Image (cartoon, rainbow over all chains, first blue to last red):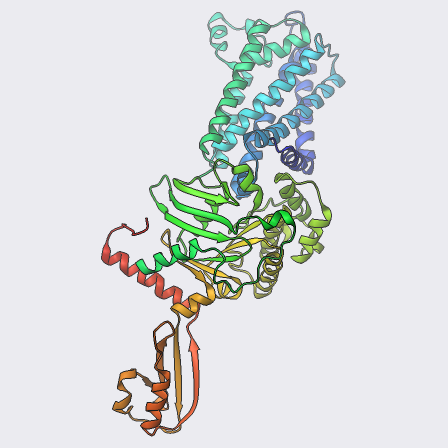
Length: 254
Length: 356
């Protein structure tokens, strides 16, 4: 039987942490997004020709949302589980009548919702600067939710793996940021030379951004089916790792 | 050593016998049939991945509603034992049953019965006291109950601090919050891991009062400590643990009676150069400038020879002005046991244990 009250407690506790630091959690991504639109949309964007028939300012909206949602999802979830580990209060969660389902639903759910809120705030911010048309709104929202969840799950794994604050920053900074930037957040991979196009296809983020952009403009670098399969595989892989962590107690129990 | 361990088994197999403590004051028909044993630990071994053997086959039975003090030096395995029962540490071998449920196959059930107050102060710094306690209650699957939380916080003198952030509290207050968190989910078993380490006298008294109230409510309490006075003050039974093994478990009063050496001190009217030869067999210790002599005897011996001693003193013509007796404290018992254990393992040079 699932301990629903425990899920609610963890979720609420994690969300209240975000609200305590609302200025930092919400205002900073809004500010940085606005800067991107000023620089890339208004200043530089006017000198860049349309990509696949989409004005550059609009073109970068899905990529920008993805960039923020992925990094926020990872860092929120990683910090959410790393912090109790760091201060030692994790003992309570480990000794409580909760299992992997409650812990993941609570911590990953909260991190995913935080990322989702920020993603929507950025979308609304973007709408202040440019006309954003969404071709497939339901698909867009579904993809956004899935991607928030997937990256929160990934961040949760990093948070359990990390044994220092440096390690906590290491993966997001050295691996995720380059993958997101090179995943076509600000360009279509069809703009790259053939060799780099082929290399890009090994970057999982390409599939996510491509699918998300499709939900906005109806065009994609990669077939939407392949993108969905890639997202599903990524989530399945993360769930598998989390299940293994809780089965073995890896870096949670001695 | 062997005698002590066999004593453990006898005590462990005879729950509730010879106890001087009052019976648990729980009522209700469904409670009458509950077994007397709350926690049964058998053959529990914990070897850490580093190879360190923290627990070497621990057998221990904890009775429902009692206060058991787990006494041992630092590094004896107290925290490992507690962590294992609570599900934080994975046992290498052996079994632990809590209220008849196995801690591994029925972890959710056993964990819901247990409250843990850890040794280290580990609190979410920027959360308020009240929210911290609400979180604990929810985590254990219980519906919100502000009246209960108020009662708990008041009993720990924390009610005025309920809206304060944990980080603003003093060390003693933080420790109270840890206790409040454990009590927030109404546990049937409470583990207190060194609850009064480094806290002032006032908090120690408060905590003992809380423990007393909990015991009256039927809560089983296991307390680890290296303060003997704490065990002496509040425990019903004492288990002495050293180097991952339980050396002895007994009623506190029995322990003192059985293990305790008593001493009888005689104050003489006159100053003696030496004691008469007729008293040689008592091995008296003449001290304080020859005005006092102390006789040490064992209460568990067949005869204490006190009557004979007094007759012989009288016969020797010594005039006694005053007499007083002293009982050895748990601390002295504890130190002698641990020293005995250390020297035994040094001379044996092996880890082979009779009950392992």
